[in-house]
Amino acid sequence: MSELSQSEFDYLIGQEKRFEDESTILLGPAPLQWSKKIQSTSTKDTFSLDFYRGTFRLEKYTYNHRFKQTTVLMRFDSYGEHSNPDGERISGHHVHIYKEGFGDKFAYPASNYGIESSDTIEVVLQKILVYCNIKIIPPIEIPMN
Image 1 (cartoon, helix red, strand yellow):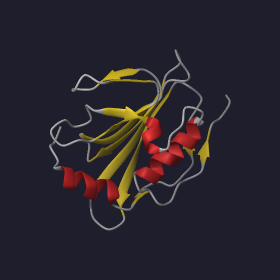
Image 2: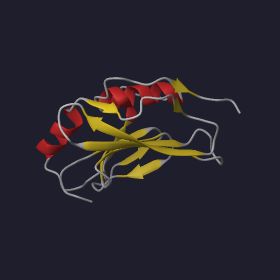
Image 3: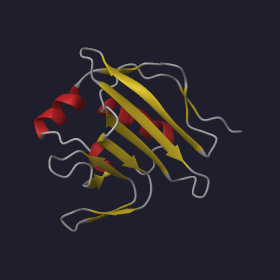
Image 4: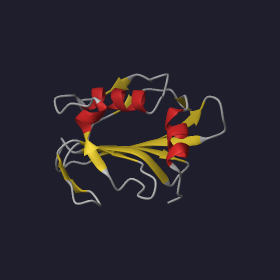
């Protein structure tokens, strides 16, 4: 993991971005895993958005926004429990946000970022894309088969 300062994180997360391929984003059927390339609209900085959804617990899925290939800027986990380095425990929907000196080791309740437990998988994705400053949101589809 490459180490960023907090101001570098703020700069990177605040950059306006777009998907390199703006075709429909599929969120099913499970199991499903993909990674999409994202480009800054004003610099040569590259990012990616990863998605994972298994078959054991369909309500469990993860979105992961990375800088280059190694630095997690933001991760959303729909299910589970997390223990922060300071001992605080977070249950249920939670968001990992980059923190200087800790990377993505700290998690926060997703509701702190406007994501509610009642939000659908596609609404969660839309809110994450807005938080990550991705300006053009491609169509999102959840195929039933």
